[in-house]
Length: 211
Ligand code: PRT
Ligand code: ZN
Image 1 (cartoon, rainbow, N blue to C red):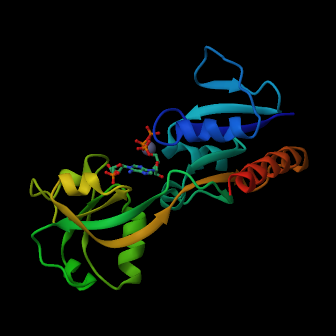
Image 2 (cartoon, rainbow, N blue to C red; image 1 turned 180 degrees about the vertical axis):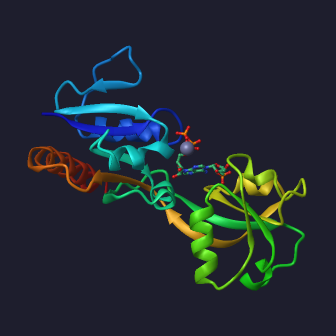
């Protein structure tokens, strides 16, 4: 019996996800097949996927567990469990406006057009704040939208803030604080749960040692 973990195929989560496994003493076989590989000293199979697909694959049992950004987990609304926060890939989902634009409260967004790849999370936030605005969903290069007149504001991930700065934007609201999280299918069964518990024990031991 092996536990199947889905991790990002390439991108910002890839290196730290593999590093986390390595820190846990888990060695991967150097398979040529980059879509899946096995651990040689732990009952773990690794599947490499696009991060956006991971919550659904875990819900559908293609994988038992997975590593994704909390932002992706919450946007996708798949039926999976958040098992553990992992402390890397920290960022925030923020609303930003052009730097010259006047902005003193969230009411300034009323009736505005906001470009984002996170329409679900943005809508929830606007609903909570009781603000009606037009959400314009785009899949990439969100930060250029205001500069080219496609939108009045954006809602995108920010870490250092330099992308916003370079595009003449100013961060005005935080929608969500995010980090990488370990997610699990809601019913993986006793045997796989036992493997997951062993993995979690190691993850927590590594966390404590780093403190
Ligand atoms: O190909 P695939 O679909 O798997 O990857 P992806 O392109 O969708 O995701 P990727 O690799 O860019 O990000 C994966 C996860 O890393 C995200 O879902 C977040 O949880 C997390 N993360 C952490 C970030 C950032 N920091 C981040 N800064 N994801 C994206 N960014 C982008 C942001 O969108 C913006 O374009 O970086 C730019 C801003 O960075 P700063 O440093 O200039 O503020
Ligand atoms: Zn993605």
